[in-house]
Image 1: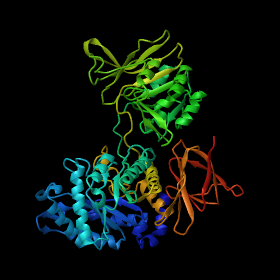
Image 2: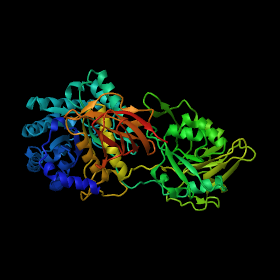
Image 3: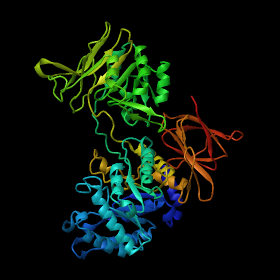
Image 4: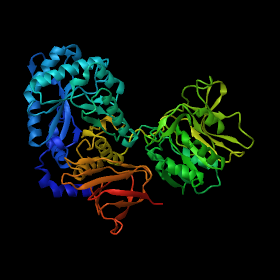
Length: 637
């Protein structure tokens, strides 16, 4: 961060006279500048200028502009637009939020059209694009969401705006998620000719952008093509990841206790941790990458699914953790079963283990949920017997539990256990069921909320499970937010998105555990998070009017991403990153290139001039290169 602000200081003279190239600049951000953030524009407009962000999205609330019929108040909006023009920042207004006298708006279309006409006539020379409502497909923003009702309002708005100025563009209201059925129903209701820009909010937190963003854009474009509308631009007017405190249970010590019971003689553990963004629901939470969660002297090995398969096949790890939830990669089950058979330990806490199956979709290069595999059969083969209140009347829905002698050292959360386990009927001689957490249920029944299935028969390893729900992290940290931001933008731009608005600029931070108040890339008092440096670096390495270079931008063999673009002067540039555990890669380029990391720091690795090669450590924090094309990427051991 110090380097980032040093660069800003050196560039202040240039950035303060930054002239926005709005038409070719895809970089935007959401900020409530028409609401409570209006008073602080003098503080953060310079930050936007420095970061190269030239579009800001904010609400044009009808209720504030015309609180009672015919009584208009434009003072704040006039002043805001004056400030934004002085700062060379373009405003994207969201038309919406009806006053009581015309609520709901779609049932008062004449009054709505009068509102639209009045504000558009006033600001038509300042605001080239008008967005029609926000997240109209969900209850929080539209009473009884209905595509036909929205289509009527959209059509009337489009006609009104075009009558004022046919050069103005109309944007579909940014939808919550990508609701294909809702969007298609708008088309079916005749909405095709009532907007110029398609607009979505494809959130995926806490999962990274690679998990679903490209798929959502491609599927949306296919839907638009179905109605002959594929040539319209797509905007993303909200996408972001919050950095609030994780509300997951504070259960600690379960891994260390389970492994201690599974093999008390082992002093050093090699732990394989699944870290594969292609599997949305099968991912080890961040806190399990901390050494303190495991026995002393453990070696933690983050790896993707392919690397995990290779390691367990050669018994290169002693134990594996796939997730902290009920999902599992079913394509790996046979290898995992053999791993346990040979003496390996499988650890999976969080609800019912091996409950929801995922398989690889080679076309999408990701794992998708499937009902073609029977998880209960997998559990039976491992001799795991789950139970809950709906299978055993002696069990309550939730139960207070305590550590057994075997589970000594486990720190319990405030939450109660909800899923339970018992010995399975097909256990073989030598197999053991060792409870770690137990509680008194009805009729004197002892319920087990965490246990080790320890085998000493035809199976030689162990399975550790824990029935506490919500073990997954639901938030990301600030470093991850800084990593996700440029990757999300580059994926969107690579897939033809015309403009992208990050949600949001300032974090109000009214509640440490509330995600909605922690989406910002600066804190409440405008101190920068790493994501601000990421945005700044992106706009410098891929400036306005850069163009996408088509072609294969995902190297599946090397499991890395490498989008390319052409700078305004014709120079080839790009970025590279991997979702595998950080490791060294040998990179081959068409010409010698310059490197910058995602936080703006210049990199100077040793360059092999003859081979045009360099060795760089790649991870989830991307690295930019300028001056040539990436020809090959080879991960090194």
